[in-house]
Length: 98
Image 1 (tube, one colour):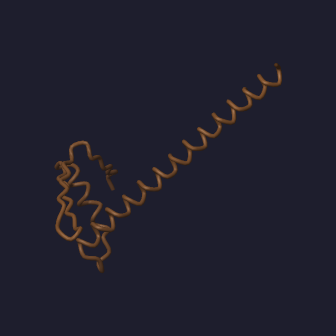
Image 2 (cartoon, rainbow, N blue to C red):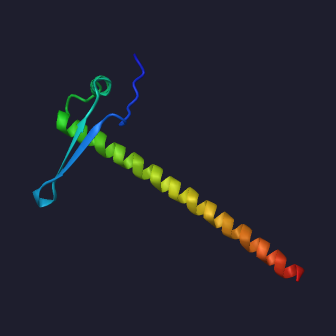
Image 3 (tube, rainbow, N blue to C red):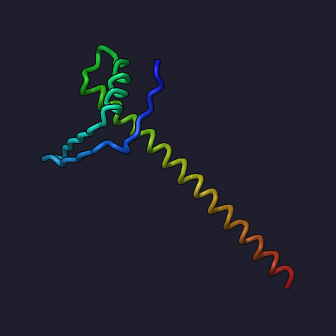
């Protein structure tokens, strides 16, 4: 099986706000991306409609991105705490030397 990777570099995404809080998202893939997606979509469980399958893929991606962002935030917070701790120890050492 060929290795397929997805990239949104050439994709065009159109977002349309609808009435009653609804939204429509349209993604236009390049030929290569479309072929890759068609290959990927062959794993769709038979009991799912195409529409439900696409929604699940979309929300799985959103959830994965949310997890990545949360991890990055925690790492940033930890880094900032370490900086503050380091600065506090330097300040404490300077005060002790005086």
